[in-house]
Length: 276
Image (tube, rainbow, N blue to C red; front, side):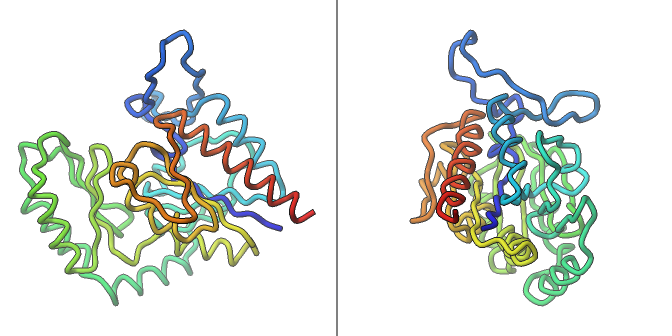
């Protein structure tokens, strides 16, 4: 039996200093391992326990670990996970499928064709974002892999009415909107992590899929997996979103990341015993 483990990264498996959520007294806070450095500064962390569990999981020959993220390829490749390097990775919310670190051209062609057929063009959405965003709270506007757009904002200053209006405008054009931390993403509706996960499962012959994620952009991934987990923080938790095959964890912050890896290991081990 081959088990595919597809996990979202930021605020699911890895955490910035601001997202750690260390609510316990300092003397009992978990020891942390830095797994990402950006511009010579530490950026993302896991607990040492989560790192050890992940290393053990990736050494299991029956497990295919697939990092699954909205990050671009360049942003993803800053991360240094413990354990065996992942052969497959899903970037750009499913728009890029990396195989041994290189983009799979056939997959990208399939994605590009589908977006052209089903969605308004990226240029139209990007122009709308720039035209309607207020400079008072807009900090940066970016395009990712020529697939989707996002804004970096002062979250507390973004009007709820603007976000609601953007969501409606984008929805009518085949796009979705997601607010994650200080970023507002506008992503084509067919651009999904689940589609890329199914492709990796097909290529690897995986018979069971496990997944985890915290944002609305992860909902399709969680629904597509045989079993899935979401942390006690994030868009999905705020919306009290769940499904029959999704476990809503009580843990939040970096301890949720540790519990997610523990759940992956536990379920993969259970499936292995059943197969034996």
